[in-house]
Length: 584
Image (cartoon, rainbow, N blue to C red; front, top):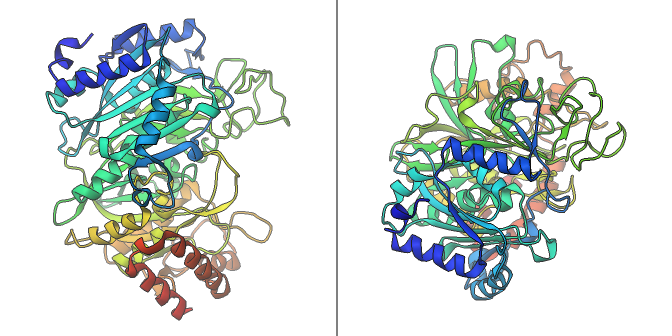
């Protein structure tokens, strides 16, 4: 119990009291963040079958959780920005009037914790000693949420100590309710720095530090305070001369962010290394000279399918201990498993729903199954990952899943053109969110589901941020997913993406040959190191090709998107679109 410390804070005690009166729990427990407490939670969840113990010899302190089959991904259609004015939310967000939303949610939360324990989880987002860090308090009735928050953030006494008597903290209220999709809401009240989530136990809906705090609410604060809260990985690219170039990169969920953040170069590039600082969230501030980025999280909440020895050997090593797996399959030996994790299919597989699985049936692991694992046990971890001042960013990457149109890599002409590239990103949707898979949608800066305010104002904020530093990062776009006429990927991707990072590194450091095209600077085939890939000349040409007909069609689609944003769209982006159309 942390009552002595916490009750000195009148704002905090008032918040706790109000939630307790509303939800009517049988018991209240303050989480102190200790290892002993974590072990107690695990024991409790093993006893009530909320967790399943995995093979403790091969996967020590690793456990499996199965969520309700109706609760396996972010529910964007049930996620709302709640303000007094709909224009503040903008067309890319679902909107509810703040008064209407509060009344609806309070009726759902009324008595929702009867018969349950109310857990109070104080947490720090960001390095403990960083001026850029923030404090949050999540109240939840889910012990699964608590143990994941223990991995993903810095919870407990240290958070309360840092908060002191301040009333500046993000307030999060979460209840499983009856896990009914018809009563499921994830609502954000930016004015109050408040998150209310009910009816879901899934990661992004229930771990309120994740997208809700670190992006939706933080993006609003970032605009007001002149910084950026972005859906971006952070990596350091260490070249053979030991110089480290720091890069932030934005990709839609399940598009290879974690794989890139933890990339292990192939043997040919053994004198290069990728140092991981974060795989999902970047908070970016200006020091006048450069942008500096911190990772507000302390763990990874990664997509399991697609993770294997070829795609991400560092991730496989990281998750071998102290990891919570969600909705993966389990082998007869008690090991976690998903399709493509191993070359051969193991025996006696139990699928993510707990049923015996036969090859050829539905997926053994859910396509959006996850692992929650501590950053500190990654073999690729950067020594700078908890630098309280952040690391200086030299390049920003935007990446979409496009089977056609966009080349392997290209560089923007300048900052505003780079913002245009980010604003017009297109992505073919994945299983990370509920909805159709493979549908093309605009996903500006990979922030469409996560920007907490009007996207037009967000674009203007990005444009303005370019004037706040003497040395703004160079901006690039990458696309690992271009295919041929048979649907086969043209680029090998994964560990070979180091070749593209090398060209980007060259460009940042004043080297690297590029050709100016209508859409940006594209590398020549000679300036990309393609040795050993055995790519046919026509494949290389396709990877770097700018198809004028396809781009002309793209311009028309961008116009539709820009028109949908409305009057808030900055004129600078219309100017960039007109330039592109003229050049084509």
